[in-house]
Length: 85
Image (tube, rainbow, N blue to C red):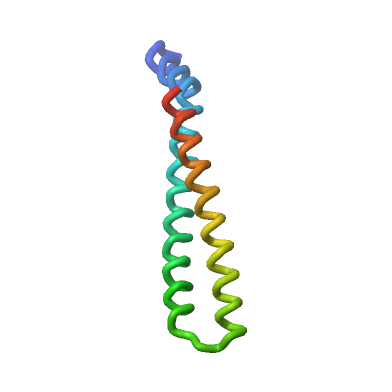
């Protein structure tokens, strides 16, 4: 093998961790965006409905999504901090 090929393989080996972290951050951002859209959709449906049972169901689902987004945002911040170090 030529030295240039060896250098590229070595470089790829050492940058795998950075690439993995960047991929994790991007995937988490996509999931958070989907959750935000779902949250808005359910909030809109909650405002439109008048059925008590359905409202309770929507409110429960909305609370769960809010908690999931909060945990996701915290995880994203931790990933970003680890990426800097």
